[in-house]
Length: 587
Image (cartoon, rainbow, N blue to C red; front, side, top):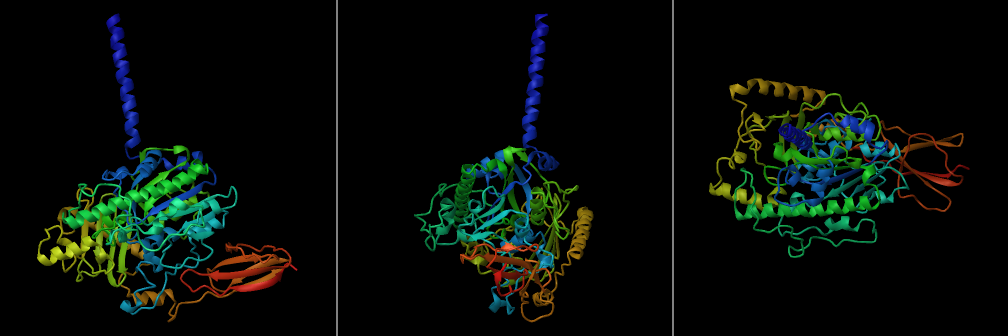
């Protein structure tokens, strides 16, 4: 009997151990379809939303498999949140990608995919222009403002168009949720510039304004111009650290130094993220706020940024939900930048408009079907133009090159300031690049490329001509054709023709019509002849104080007697109207 009792205890302990092990393992495996229950049962009705956005960010952090540098704040965020390894930008460069985030539209569908359309006019011979979305399109922050949210953007915009004044309550180096009305829900964006490719330039040193997040709330603080010296710049890891250098880059002292800068920049960005999270905790808001961390596209190095290989598109994302809901889970679904706008609205209880080209992956309006494909495009980068489109499923990437007679590498002047780029060109000219490193410098492109991104994550081996993958090639080719037609993307349309379309045949940038102000039954009505214009207004009281913020006009309103009204109209991609003044309102 005693032996049976001992055996029973052994078996019970073994069963409990198995259950505990299974429970621990379930926390780390890829888990899907949990987010609908998060939105409906466990989130505040009007949660605050905090976006922590870094630049030029590949999967170079521990929570995404790279332990070269310690990132305590991001690692904590990942431990308390959900890790999303399959987020993809719509472009390998910032401004087009930020246009997708801000509008929920593919950049190629709104004229936002050519990088730096307001500069490089001498090189291109084209007029300065901005993206022109359909008239119903609004920046997602404006939609939130219209629903009572305080919307702040710290420092960087860069959307391929000038943001309307109705887009933000405040946008600049001091912008912060702390400036909102008491208990007002907020959507706050903080942009971290430390990891930008320019952080690899020589002489090396952090820009002085990059420390701004340590000074949030002190609007009297001013930053010096320029950069710190390398001696002044914080050092977060030894310079002789061994790095896992991707096969498309040579292992030389110059490249190793740039890799050290990359990781050192990430560590400083992590400290800045920690400073903002500390402010959130100090304000008692951590568990009433959904925190997003993500990059604006892939990594900063040559053959990463600007390309639509995964090295240029894939960027880490972590979302921490209030009260650590679903902490420690990895969600492997495919997510595109065009999904951010509908997801943000879905999380705060605003029905996403029908025009949005993405789908919500969280919240009450979460799509019933997970995304099957992500899409991306590359066109002009500064002074150099190419035309490439890509589509990817959960394993394979298909790329279509519309200019196969043009080489892969493009001499973009800004990129050539990176020492690693200079090193690649030197070794190329000496004939000292290996077979993988030489691929980028071929004089012609394959018209089509197909890669197995699981077995070939660096996208080195083109399978487009392999008969074994004919079915997958045809599937992704068909999906690309469908996508191009749906969003009305014409890849071969010359940029001058694109401008003509955006400006409706005019030779100069269209101008938004002036607001028209009427007073009917003591209520103020504001209209604009320009279809789709956003209308902003300010009421100046008898004291003469001018409000800092432009209110979004939505419906007729009353104003205090003897006040003055200022109004301005904005249509994305148009020149804003002049400011209209109406005096003696309410008398």
